[in-house]
Image (tube, rainbow, N blue to C red; front, side, top):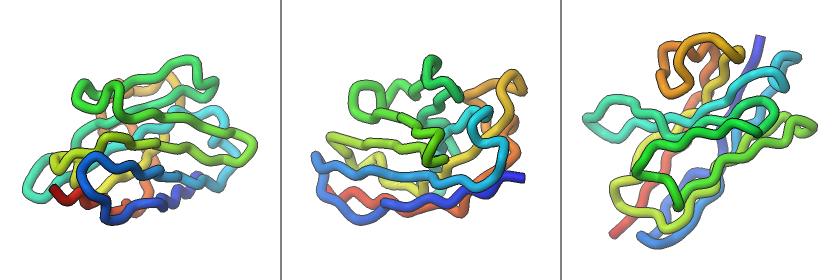
Amino acid sequence: QLQLVESGGGLVQAGGSLRLSCAASGRTFSSSIVGWFRRAPGQEREFVAAISWTSLTIYYEDSVKGRFTISRDNAKKTVYLQMNSLKSEDTAVYYCAAKPAGVGQTQSAAGYDYWGQGTQVTVSS
């Protein structure tokens, strides 16, 4: 089993920065792919970024490339999402999720077995 807890959300002005954290408990964290997803009001959940357990493979959704950076510290069982140059369209509830490597498509929420409760990010324009 794996439990995930997000933190770091909040209210920030456009152009500002936030760093989200996803703290995990469980023995399988270091071998898992961890992804960040978000759901804006009235919209479908969408992929944001993902990182392999070695940190050698990283994916980003096109709209966040160059602004967001995903990283992980397996010793601390924590994955981070550094978000810079935030825009109003980044406003959403952000979720971290984990899945075993090699199962399902990394950018698809369907392959992820474990989810956090979400953290709200609000960007004011």
